[in-house]
Length: 139
Image (cartoon, rainbow, N blue to C red; front, side, top):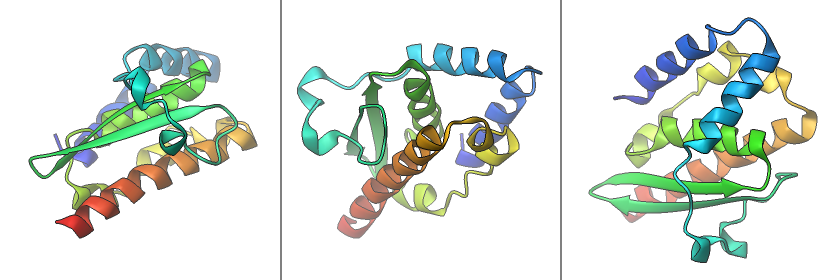
């Protein structure tokens, strides 16, 4: 699936919920399905800066595509990173860099997060795109 197709899928899933409490619950559920980072990867270098919670993200490059794993010590934050991983897992560095992530605005995620979580979301996206840029440059 393309990033755009995954974004549309996410938008449709969140459209099933009228209340933000239900959307938060769904985010928590998504966090349970997050590809979990190996314990040995929970290092300072994999810790995302700018997040109030501790979020670790690792990236593997295989066959021209990027694959991510993560963990967080906060359940909603883990759901957010799981949503981003779902969007970007198995995509090319170019597609990741070109993604506009319109689903975040459409589902209202940023506006319903606390300022610190919203900053964390931006930091997570920056880190994923930094991996994509690094692997794009490597070729």
